[in-house]
Structure formats: C-alpha cells, structure tokens
Length: 424
Ligand SMILES: Cc1ncc(COP(=O)(O)O)c(C=O)c1O
Image 1 (tube, helix red, strand yellow):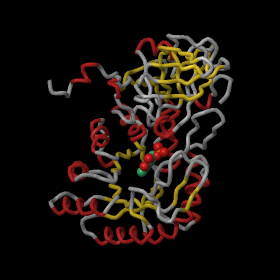
Image 2 (spheres, protein in one colour):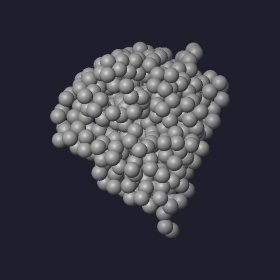
Image 3 (cartoon, helix red, strand yellow):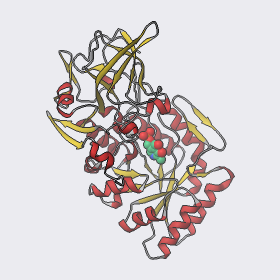
Image 4 (cartoon, helix red, strand yellow):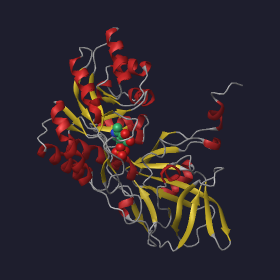
C-alpha cells in the first residue's frame, strides 16, 4: 500500500493524468461516470488491441484469448480483428463468439463437463479445436461423429501434477483437480493412445494450464521441464501452455510482459527437444490492466476507534475477486488521481454481506466525500465476467474508449431486465 497517487503501471496504456484528472483513451473518467452512470467499466481499446497483437507476435496466429476473463460481442470482434483465436469454455461463451461473427474455426472449446448439446453445437459449427477433458467427453464426441458430423481436431488436457503459484512451483504428484487427464497412473497416456487410434477424432496435441496469477515466469519453465518427457512421447503437433501469466494489481507488484513470458516458455520447450507448435491462452494479461471501474461514493461511515467504511454503488456483484480470493486492489479519485492518499478505509459495496469489501485498508485521498467518483484499476479481468446481480443490483455498463470517443459495448442492466424471465 502506498500513500502516493496511483502508479502508472496499474493504469491502462492511454491513461493520462492532467492537473489531477485522469483520462483514458482521451476521455475524462469523471465525465464518463457522470454521462453513463456508475458503476462503469471503462476499457482502453488501444490497450486491448496492443496486448492481442503482442500475443500474436509472441506465440503466432493460434494463440487464443481466454474469453472467460471478459467477453462480449465487441470484445470477441476486437480479439478476432487483432488475429487471436478465442478460447471458449461453455456453450454460452461459444454462442457469444459466434454471434460476434468470429468463424468457428478460430474457436478452441474447453470445459470439464461439455454436454452433448454443447459438443453438437461445436461440431456442427465447425469448431477449430476441442480440448478434451474426460473419458465421458471422448465417448460423447465419438457418438456425435458416428452420427454424421466431421471428426474434430482435438487436444487433450492433461493434469500435470504440477502447480505454478504466484511465486512458486510445486510438483504435487497428482494434482487434486477436476480438470484434465492425470499424467499419473498413465491416465493421460491411455487417453492419448485412444484418441490417436480413433478414426472419430483427429489428434492434434496436448494442453496444460499450470496455474493462475503466476508472477515468476521461471515457474512455467520448470513446469515445462518436468512435463517434457510426457510431451515428447505424446508426439503432439501442438503444445498449448494455457494461460496464467501474473498481472500487477497493487502497489509494489511487478509483472512480466506477454512477450517475456513467451520467450521463457518457448526457450524451455525447445530446450526440452519438443518440436510441436507452441500455443497459449492468455486471459488476464490481455484484459486486466485495460480497465478501471468507476464508482460513486454513497456513504462514508466512521466506526469510532475502529475504521472508516467508504461505501460505493457496486461491490461484490461487479468484482467478486476480493471475496473469492482475498484479492487486493487500489483506489483513487477520478479528479485527483495523482494526489497523495494519506488515509485508510475499507471500500465496501452495497450488498447484504459483511464480506462485501472491494478494497481492504485502501489508501484514500484527503477529504474523500459522498458523490465523488472513486476508481479501482486493473478490473478488466474476471470482474464483469464473474459478476452477478446479487441483491438484484443491476449489472454495470461497459464502455470502450479510444481517440477521445466512448462507445457502450454492454448496456447497464435495467429493472425490467430483472423480471424479464420471471413468470408473472
Ligand atoms: C484452461 C485455461 N486456459 C486459460 C486460462 C486463462 O488464464 P489467465 O486468465 O490467468 O491467463 C485459464 C484460467 O483459468 C484456464 O483454465
């Protein structure tokens, strides 16, 4: 936690602080908040495009954006325009990407429990690749192909017995996980042998995802080193290393770029004698820092001798990460983003949960007042996408900003939306 103003590396690429006021994509943030209402997700379109291009340059055209991090029609289009494939992990994500006009062949279908209906939709639309996750799924795909659809290109997701955490690497033997075929007990080998022998699937390669929020990229290299014998034996034409690159959220954190990650991963794979095409699925590192959320302060409560609570008009419904993972964030005011933040308060939401804390012990500026626009940076990943309308709080609007212009890409939910599917 720092008492100084917000650090620039936690802000979108085009953020500028001028006389205290922050603008993104040439748009003044406080003005956007007043115009569109709050809470408001503000995404820097140039930042998004730059990260997509960086990923394509680093990994090639089959690198896929992990759409679980943030997805809407405009985002799917942007990603496709910038040359990335898209990782979808449910029928819903697939539907949005297809509705955006992304060709099915540019989609990679993930998920630990794909239904026959979802697999049918994927196969009939001509999905690019399926990352197979279980024996049940293999049987479902085979049944569908036997019934007449074209055999899909498949990767097998393996459970590597390795976990890369924020700053460490663990060899766990068998990772206790619902995802993938364990390498242990030769499960993964048996699955690969089956797929390679099956006329109903076209074996393409191996997929692993070793962790999330991994700051120390050498963890990826060491994970790859221990996986190498398995990958070599699998004779994969493609080796996908999943996602997981760490992103700085708070003061003092630093993260590697997508390019730096790709160099480490590629070197480790080639040094291990693996010739396969290398692909990856970054999510957070594409979108997290691209966005800030703007809230309006509604209530400031002093609990004498204990602490100050600053309540804003959103909360765990637009950013569940603090509640789910204890994640930290920073907060700053839109009109004096570079001002010192000498005070401390919990920034809380408006939900009926004591745990509805967006920023614990936030550094806040002098004289923060009801009505101020307060922003949290690095909210572009797993915020809107993991959000809810708990307490029937309306899901926020999302705008993309670029070159001094803003455009709504997701409308704010309305009260009518809340009852639109209810029987009345
Ligand atoms: C299979 C897979 N690929 C990619 C990702 C994206 O990871 P990140 O957003 O950390 O880059 C995830 C995240 O959970 C994942 O499970």
